[in-house]
Length: 373
Image (cartoon, rainbow, N blue to C red; front, side):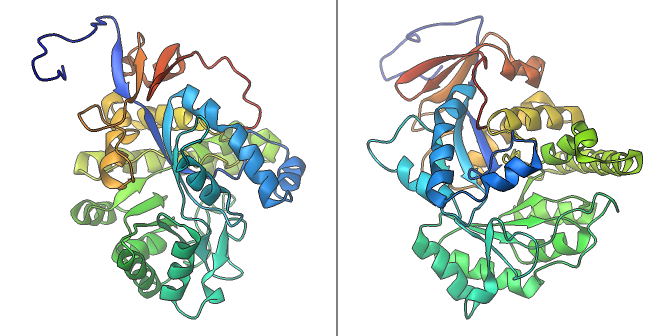
């Protein structure tokens, strides 16, 4: 027990409970609504003004705390929603909300994937100038879109990487000059190679990663955020999406390969950090992270490895401005207290629990309105 000087016993003993740090969501797009499944409505949603998008995003913040999420690393948007929420958190009169930091607009190449959340490198005279513009806007870290996405019909990343190793290196170097971390969207062997050799702090997604790449990530302390949930949701909603059996087979093969790589990465000592890509199709904010953790366990990670991925691993590696995600002196009192130990199954995180958030305690049983998540 952690006792004060001169204290011989804890203030309270709860023998039937498990105590764990609150959960950290390391990859979410706070400007998007993952739970909306109708494409027409999703497209209409994105036509809202930045202020309207921010208003909707603010409405989900308290719900996230009640689920047990104490911090979010936003993964980028060009509308300023993540940056505005980060600034809101810094205010003394902030509402009940998780810690939020954001890269602002991600960086991509003009005409390539990512235009809905990124602004082009070509808008600036140099990689350094591009990064500097993000920092001036309030970015806490730099997000790179180094590759396109998976072509589910082909079962692979079809297009060439967006960024060369040299470009990634220059952008990362510029970020580090401002003492900021850089994280990169990357899937496909070639694109993953570029971001590893470019020395990013974490690889996001990382589908089709090789064992030798995992070894270099371990040796260079590059973390991996595997984001299983968005691909799993493509299978769950295959009928709605119009995917046939061939595409579903491709999706399952991708997930099986990803699961094998995840287990291998953990065994090798790669630092794995949990992020759901909330806001993606079918991936709700908050509940999507619980989905992600269950998928990580299903892939073959132990329950304690999954919990560490959603708490201490990110707390240690991602250099947040505040201390949370661990139960130790000097860290914020933001934790989960439950009679349903997640060590017996990650699904227990969905069961009734108490969320302690600074000086407030919430009884969380997840029976609430999920509208807007």
